[in-house]
Length: 231
Image (cartoon, rainbow, N blue to C red; front, side, top):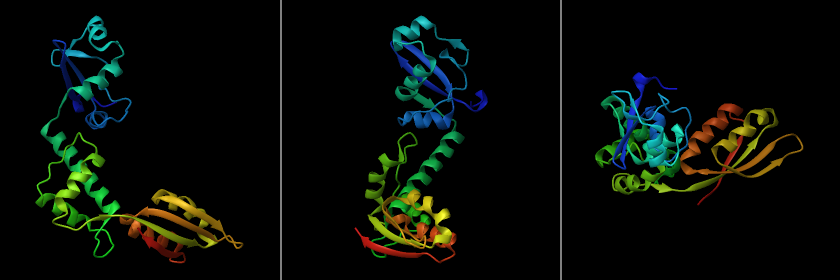
């Protein structure tokens, strides 16, 4: 549970009443985006006014929200109301959201001229030059289309999938078996008589270099890797 000193106020005005709750700023943002979170309240109360510690009466909560369950009401307040952040909290969340958007593009898109991902710094600079408004309360996925549309005139982008065939020597199968599935969808898996593992995995093109580095690091360069196609 977040401490009261680190909590923020979420406020909803409805039915002629004002309701406030003290919540974890990070979890509040996720709930605002539609995610489910637990242990997000800094105080187990619904207030009429936090500053005076004036709690809302149970009868009023039942009348307005149809329940007296504190967490259920707090979620409603978060999703329908306003969240009041300090400038430092807003700055931190904004930087986290920007990094999330940049990471998504880097992991899922490539430069169509080279077939490789753009460097992180190039994507960051493009977002900066395009003066893109990043919404800290909107999910990363819901901001990708608009972001890509605005930075494409600055850096070419193409979203595509890659099918990668990997032959893993038996000595490294134990370490590699679960790794490939974390990068994408395993389409095919076969075992050789000598314990060699053959895997066909489909990944986003932006993960290609990261996957290759991971395979080579684990197998000390002994694995065989082949790009099957570019779709």
